[in-house]
Image 1 (cartoon, rainbow, N blue to C red):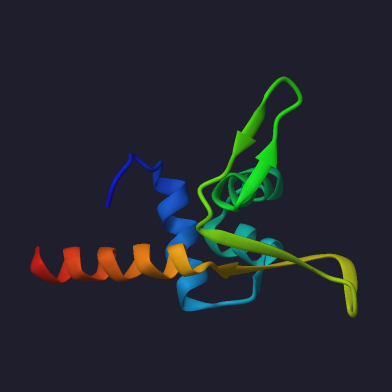
Image 2 (cartoon, one colour):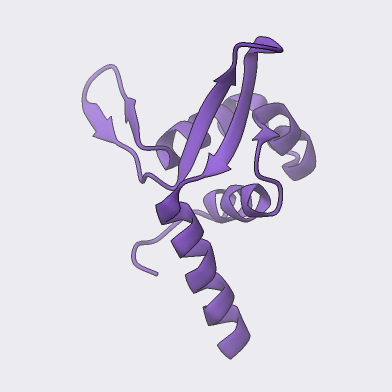
Length: 97
């Protein structure tokens, strides 16, 4: 699949694959992960994020969308095309194993 991914990234990616549009709060509750960790990980898995000291490019596996209609604090998470391709590779890998 390319690259080493921390277990929490895999957990988030697989959960989002099962529930497109899941909120970061729901991810936090389901995975029993602090909200700040979910937010930080989702940013790193998204297309781009920036650190104060240096610009960083994300992995483009997730897309974080702010819900301006219901609540601007609500962030729904979706797989990108690249994220969907990664999940398919993971499924193929697990079927072979």
